[in-house]
Image (cartoon, rainbow, N blue to C red; front, side, top):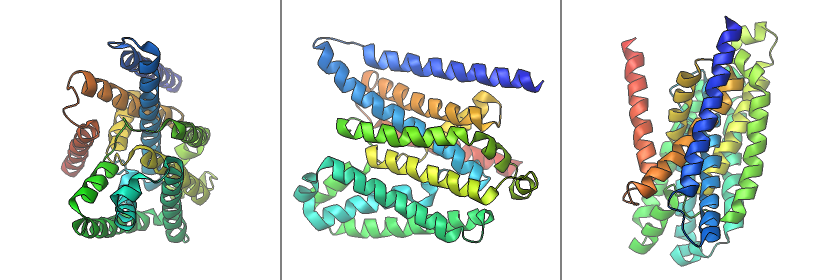
Length: 321
């Protein structure tokens, strides 16, 4: 019976891969005209950003939910998006709109990634000193810090000139059409390593998902596993956020669909499934957004709206139970 369930889950994983391949083919080949080489190069850059961010956010959410023992939360709840908005607002306030636009792309990306990663690592390391069973306090502290940073960012934005405020607005909304090609290789390397490590520790995550007491009984170094998982979450979310901007509810959408699509709790299947679903949502969504909607709305807004609705549905369903 167990082997049959594994076979079904793996076949569904193959189906998710096929869905991503189809969405990729449509995205690249739809209405392809001359000059083919130039158009394909532009589409490849955007496609790479969509796949990297979708895969990273989806996988990171599965790891975060396992560490927290709660499938209703996402890494964004700890304040990644608020810190990113605060950083952009601070830079515009300090340098001005013209100075902000002149910051070299690569140093800006590296600094933002480093700040986001260090902030998350410091939060986890400081609050988990008494053990990984204190994850709830960590999450609540992250939520409070997120509100604080949003408040500071909103205050700073009120004293900006209208033109500078427009620069902040543009910089803080997730955008896949303006990703610099030189950043993709760095992001791909960092996210590839993080995803590979997450998949390698799948067995440990399966045991950790049983809870602290059961995991310790089974001989798992629970605290070490949770800290490592949260470190990988920090890296994946920091890189993806610095690359395109915050996409808070994409992870919740990807992880929830991954659990439902695979019908298993094995992280060896869940992690790649969430990564594939996250990438497929972004690629297919961007395809529909560009072709069907004609750039009439921001795709990230649509994804966030769908993820927010799913969050409300999950919360209400749990309350009824």
